[in-house]
Length: 133
Image (cartoon, rainbow, N blue to C red; front, side, top):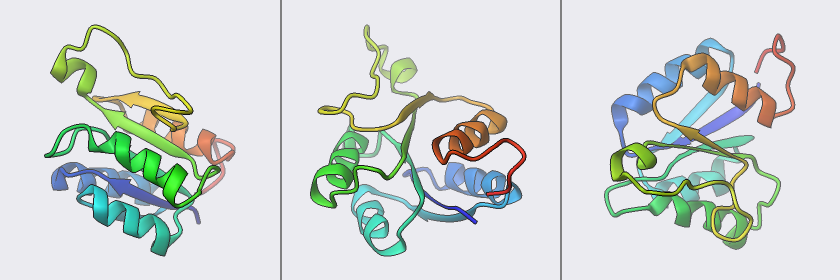
């Protein structure tokens, strides 16, 4: 069973994602903020991280992704970003995964369907669609 870490400051969304992922046989741990999330990456040893970008102090998800890659040296840990930053901030450009500035594997714009989240997680983990988490 793959272990997924959700880092999102919205407790309601965390609960929703957790329920969805557990229905698909994933083990789920969660963190409400960047510091707790980085600590859990180190201690819980997740197989994949689902990371929000906009947290109370700004674009903290960017810093979390860089800390996972640079400080923890976890270059192979899949990271999926989920964010509404493009819609909320009306930014005239799009953030995309980038090795230096946004070292993640996939960007997923909110809102998204539960099926899309599960499919993308399975793809990032190299699982086949019918394979349990």
